[in-house]
Image 1 (cartoon, helix red, strand yellow):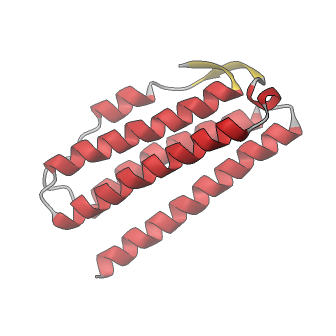
Image 2: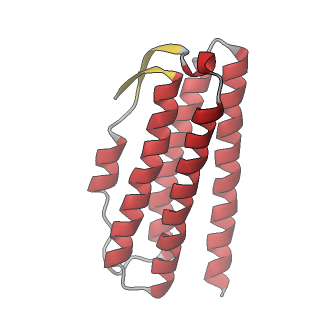
Length: 151
């Protein structure tokens, strides 16, 4: 996918979160384990929350920032990746966590790449703040998943 403006980058990330949520919903319907189902439900809700947060940011961000142009920013067909992702019905928490981290790390890397190709300091800092928030939330989620295994 080729992206030209910051608004498109943010819309793409928001939509990708919905794609992840749909994937988790699909996996939830096929999962055997109650614990895995709980984890997938949490991840699905979390993706909706992140999507909503990004959409709110887009609504409140200065238009001049959102209209920032980029040259040759491309990213994979993330929706297809989510649609093609599968796990067996006997998946465990580690399988789900591994899939989630792979998908999330792809989005974080895309944001970092975009930030590093941004010449405007204000926009670069805002994108790097978003990366920092994403990484912090990711660490919290991993810790929560590990604590869930102890129960």
